[in-house]
Image (cartoon, rainbow, N blue to C red; front, top):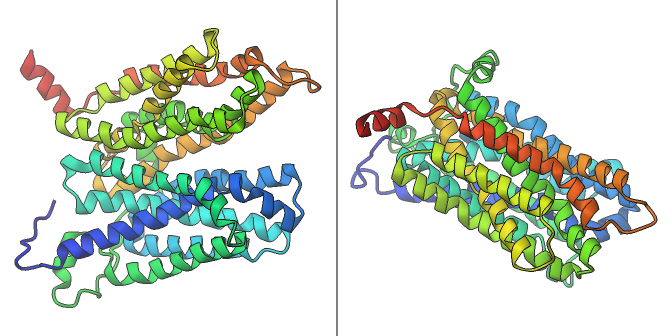
Length: 431
C-alpha cells in the first residue's frame, strides 16, 4: 500500500472517498435492477403485453448475462484498468436502463437487463480492485463487507420504496432517472477516479491526466487461475453457499410458507427480510473478525457448516412457522455472509495483476448456481406434486434436498481449502 503524506496531497481523501461513493452507488443501482422486477413487473408486463412466462424470462436475463460476463469483465479490468472499465460499465448500465425504460417491443425490453448486467459486472470487478488499491490490505475483508452491505440496500429500495414511488411516478420515469444518474456517474468518474494513490501522486498538479494502465494480463493467464487449487476451491464454496441462498430467497422462500402453511405474502416475507438483513450486516462483521485475526480458512469452514445445518434443518425436521425456521434462515444468512472473507482469500491466492479475473471467476459461481438451482427446484417441485393441488411442506422438503446436497459439497470443499502461508507459519509457531 502506497502511503502519501496528506500535507503534500490534501485532496487525496476527497478523491478516494468520492470515487468509492460513486462506484458503490452505481453498483447499488445494478442490485436494484436485479430485484426490481418483483415490484415493477406488473406495470412492465401490462404496458408491453408480456405473459407471466415472458416476464420471468425477462427477469432471468440479468442473472445469465451477469454470470457469463464475469470472467471477461475481470480480464478487461485487469487489462485496461478499473477507471476505464468502471466508466464503460456506467455507460452500459445507462444504455440498458434507457432501453428498458423506452421499450415498446418485448425484444427491446429483453436487451435492457442484458446490458445492465454486462455493465454491472464491470462495476463489480472495478470496485473490488479499487478497494484493493485504495485501502490497506489488512482491512480488505472489512471494506468488502461494507461494500456488500451498502450494495444490498439496492434490493431493499427495489421493494417497498419503489412500490410507494409508483404512486407518483411511472416505471419508465424511475428507470430513466436511474439511467441518467449512471451517465452522470460516468462523467464524474472520468474526472475524479484514479487507479491508485501511486497514480494520483504521479499525476502531480494535473490531476485529470491519469490514464488507465494496461497490465500484462492475457487470456492465457486464465489457465493459471483454473490450475490454482485455492481459487477453484473458493469457486466451489461460494457456489454451494451463496448460490442456494440466492435461489431460495429470490424465488422459493415465500411460496414455501404461503403454499405449505397458508401464510400471507407479508407474513412469509418476514423470514426472508430478516435473513437479508443478517446477510447484509454479517458480511462486514465477518470481514472485520477475519481481518483482525488474520485468518480466512476457519471463517470459510464455519460459514459453510452454518449453511449445511440450515438446509438440513429445513429439509429433514418436521416444523411449523415460528422460531425453528427463523433460526434456520439465520444460519443460511450467515453462510452467505462469508462473501467478504471468500473474496479476500481469492485476492491472497493470486498475483495483483490477476486479482480482477480471479475475483470475477469466483463470483460467477454464485450466480451460475443461482440460475441453475432456481430452474431445477422448479422442475423438481412440478415433478413431485399434482398440478391441480397446492404443494405442501413434504413436497418442498424434497425440493430443498437439492440445496442441502450442494451445501454439503460446499462444506467438504471448505474443509479442503488449503491454509495460507501466513496461517501455516502461525500454526508452526504455536506448535
